[in-house]
Length: 230
Length: 380
Image 1: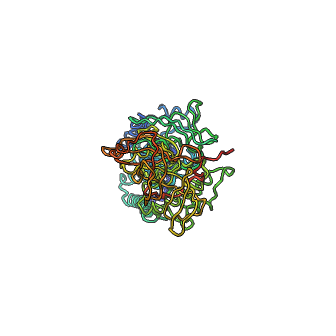
Image 2: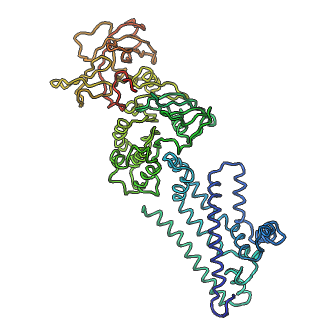
Image 3: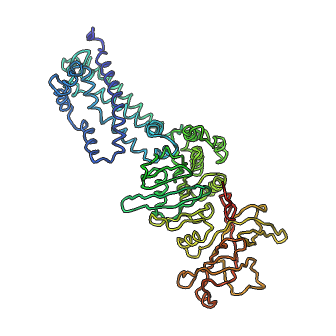
């Protein structure tokens, strides 16, 4: 499925990266929201340990994370075997494997803005909602989520943009399978290695523009929120 | 007749709340005390926001009974709660904030409609506004309307005026007074302001260090002495009475009010005969005489009996009196702040009959409960 004409811009890796980022962000919002809620409110003694685990991808070299994932997801690894036992195909060097890796790698970028937003709410609005007859789920959906909407926006965009730009983890567990795991960052690397600077330029410029626009959207939304009482 | 019954215990670090009291089913119960006495904690525990041990019953409903393993979570307790800070939902308009309470109140228990709450708190012009744009007083009015729209069985007001400046307080107070008068549910009003308590409350729960130091009707002797004792300034002791306007002397611009079979004269009160007004007798305005004073400029002179003499500082004595009762009952309580020397010269002792001269009577406001000052009428 690789790009037919070598000279034209090869959109495949870009679309693959966008698809990976979208799927990863969706999963991260689903998993990260309850996790951030718990982190923001829990006083459990093991909370710092969980927090440290979530933040680990911030400091760990992506290749280290990717290496462990490769071992875990491989046919002989625990996750790979469990997945196979459930009837799943191989994980390493597949799009599914990339999603798993990206979810772990971008976790802190989604969880931390959400946690900050939830912690910033304080308990007062939720207590007020309880006193007005709202059950816990109701309070969460009608008070906590709307009041933390800035945090959700930041989390989604940071998670998306960060996944779009990842390289090391993808390289380790995805390899470089055109159409399946060859995302834009890898494609750029390939082009440079092959001294195809023009192609590398084109892809890099697109990625640069997309990332800038995403961040611009976040900061513009933040500004509108601060200025407009609407 | 059922009111509010509370027996709660709760430890928070070094502080322990251990409070038991009952409050009438109508009218305002002031939860009064110094800061740190546990007033807010008590209200929070009653609302289920803090988990205390014990029992909370309002009317026929038991909200909590540790012995029976019952604990209704806050959202299932039919209460209205107004916090110190209004705590409006900033992502909703004023109308949205009000609607939040209304849609969560089952249709069959709704007693307060949106229009009624909006009218009662004067919110008509604010409905489309966002909470950020409101003044402190406006925010608190929205919070009160929102609490009312729960159609609560009990209303909790946790120092609703403490975060407001003086003009905003003045703006809120009339709404509070009206609210209390018109509401047929018990109101628990936390305050550390004696002035607010005297003006708004009917019943007192005095907290000291997490315990109930005194409780009773605000016009009773117990509450008066408790309040006198809790006052930082000793010279502000006094008693309260809810009196019925009996008539006016238009020539001299005076009014007569009756309480406990006695007739009190005051500068013309703007109220029709039959209306109830709350009076405050400051102890410093009351003097005592052994014999009936004659040819005196003081209009209010009543026969009284000395109940107790309490030392109040190096030179003063607080004389606890009961005015001679004609209509039955114990007689209206009265406090007189006199010098120790006068007490010695008059050879005052408990049980003595004296004459109390009241130099000035302050009109505090209108009592909030509709109950007449006479013993409460029996109710089915």
